[in-house]
Length: 133
Image (cartoon, rainbow, N blue to C red):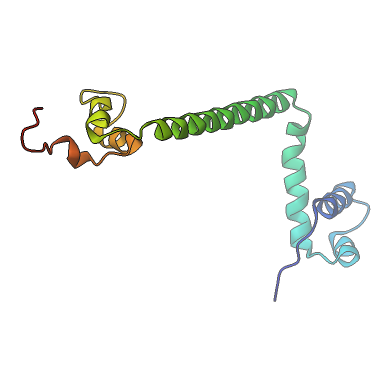
């Protein structure tokens, strides 16, 4: 048997009816086709969250979080565009790519640097005969 899914509007109506107290839970349950236990849960949820509804701080926090999320998504997108651009420009030789690798970098591992420039890490240590390090 599949569970019924109730819209937010129905849940709000049922919870409000229960809060008003003009009808019993069983009467509300019969009217809306919802189990009395579910009515009690929705009523409790509304009563628990009601004080936060009036909180301006909550609204400011949500807005600040949304702005931060948007800024971070924008930054990620920009970095992806830049990375793709760099990868297109790095169609040089293996020797050229080796020069890009910073062996003493504390910011990024050698493996990650190699991955970004499209260079096998093992190629850092392989030198053809006659080539100097």
